[in-house]
Image: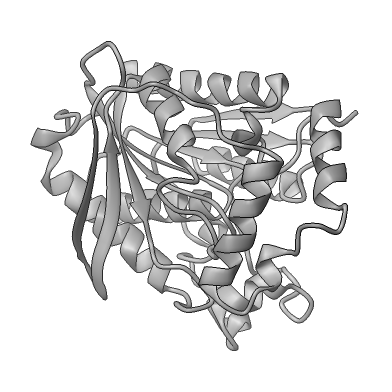
Length: 298
């Protein structure tokens, strides 16, 4: 049974007062609609952290905004590069600040939150290119972050999970050591999705979506996965990506990759974002962060 607190949120969202962000024609309008939903239906919790630093770094098409979050109360010995969700169309440093704050505190890590370019203004592979550039910057600047090159992880939720998984594949190919990948209900495989009837796919991948979907940067499940970092994967039974997430975990395990798969029987997509209004979502989010902490501490 779906968590009653999530059911209540769904009723409010479907009341007709909130237009679908992913039907918007521009990034700005999509973000405006998404912010209204977050503000009224699932506001983020306030999580106190240590130092927070906003800055910009060089990217392939201009500057990329990042936010560096240090954990409260202890010195970090690890680093996490995080990519927010939002169907590659919404989300930013503020919308997912609570996500990275939770990870920072519970995993004892410096978390670098990345504000990559969004569709439909910037089609694939713009988001992935920015993700790779931000990851490279973190690796080059570890001395001022967590400091330990053996304790670097990537993470992301939904669309950001796809970017994190792609970064893990690229890190392996580059010979960059990566300790873990935290994939919260990630998009893993675009190849079999119906782009004709899926607005998000068309707006992210563009008119040649069938070709783009074959690219491992869009579909991490299409890559050779042997040798990528150990994965923590979180999925809810009521998530439309649930079967896809389980299949990706199976592919990783078949490739010899250690996987911690957490299946939550009463949660759906976006539960990491619902931690401020649902106790079960908060518990699940904390558990995934603790799983990441255990890997980084090992």
